[in-house]
Amino acid sequence: MLLKLGKDEQILRSWDYACEKEGKDQNQANLTVTNRRVITTIRNAHKYEYSEVPIESIRRIDASRDKNSGFGLVFVILGAILAIGGAVWAIISKPFQPMTLLPVAIGAVLIIAGIIQMTNQNKGSFYLCFTLSGSEAGKLDIGANSLSTRKKSSQNVSVKIDFNLVDEMLTSLGAIIYNYRAIAKSEGRTIVVGTSAKAAEGTSNGLQKADGGEEEQADG
Image (cartoon, rainbow, N blue to C red):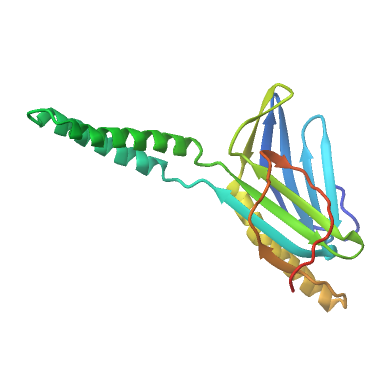
């Protein structure tokens, strides 16, 4: 489904930030910013979920992301060195000393931990919340969590997050809103916008749909 634009409306940025695989279906999550609206969608061949807010109603942006580090390979290499060194030590020790098996055991643990870490290396979560003011008072929030696989209607559901796009999205939104505020100010309109970061709490596994809520008092 193509996004319909209003008169003089232009797309500033658009990000397909995550994909949720549910059986044979793939749900594509997108955030689009125009010079008039912020639009969130989750779509596949059978459904289309859509939310939008006027860009001038955005009062504050809260965001966070958490991605597993890439130290798995380091753990595997260190573990292999310890295990091989311990095995050689055990072979050349005469008489045999049980202590020589300690490096082998530690090495094995490091190898296992490294493999697990490498499996989850590109997984993580992120959370993005727009606090709104005026007649649109409330919140619009989205998020995704790819750390584990869950069951839905007896089917495995997994999520893949494009963290390159997420990083670009989270670091660009404030500038886009600021630039829009500058343009609005030059046209004689007043927009109050603030930005901050907060920890992602309660982001469920999978794609988080756009949701509204009661407005919270913002600092500043």
